[in-house]
Length: 104
Image 1 (cartoon, rainbow, N blue to C red):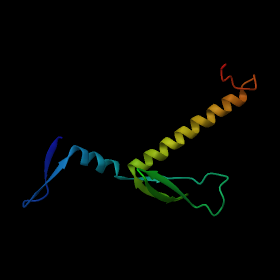
Image 2: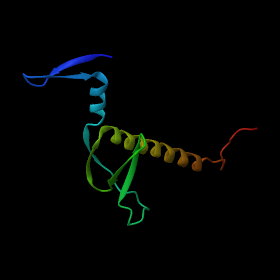
Image 3: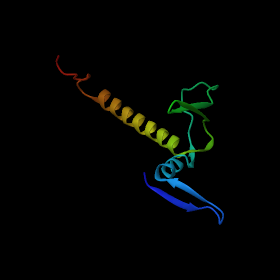
Image 4: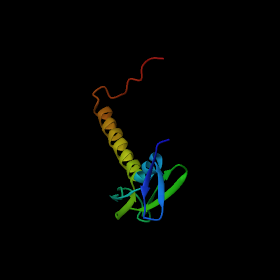
């Protein structure tokens, strides 16, 4: 494990590992905004993100300062949803009217 020393002040030093710095970067807070999806009930004002068994609850339609790792989860979720929507449209537009799942 790589170790570096960072001087805090004249009296003492703090030892940081590469893993601790990487973890600190992942938990650095970044600005993020999540629009409320259409079709949700008016009473649904929050959403939940689960990371490593811990739940994080955030409000829709609010400028948030969230950890970078949570923002990455939300970005990945949006990207996967966009891909799924595009694939669904492609399959529905298929002139054959169905999906060939192969023969068994």
